[in-house]
Length: 85
Image (cartoon, rainbow, N blue to C red; front, side, top):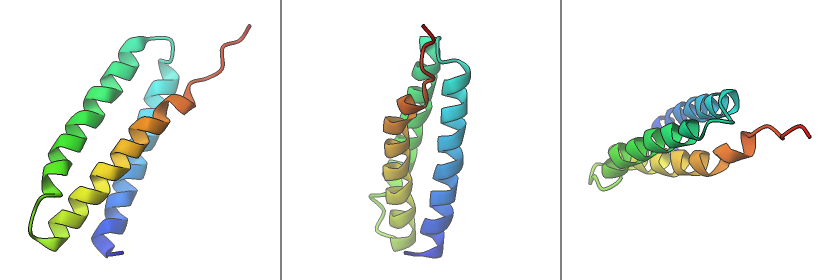
């Protein structure tokens, strides 16, 4: 565990909270999930390419961000409010 990895996980935590807030605010609109999916996929693509770097610090940054954002995207639908019947 490096200092850069800890800072990266703080970045992932902030992005995950933003995704959850956005998803909960517009849960009835399917465009919200599409927007979160596009944002997460672009983040995974850009930081995922850093995971292939031969520099250890960049590799750790890319790997931690890619895995964190991927997990965040998978957990985002759990924040959908329950429908009132």
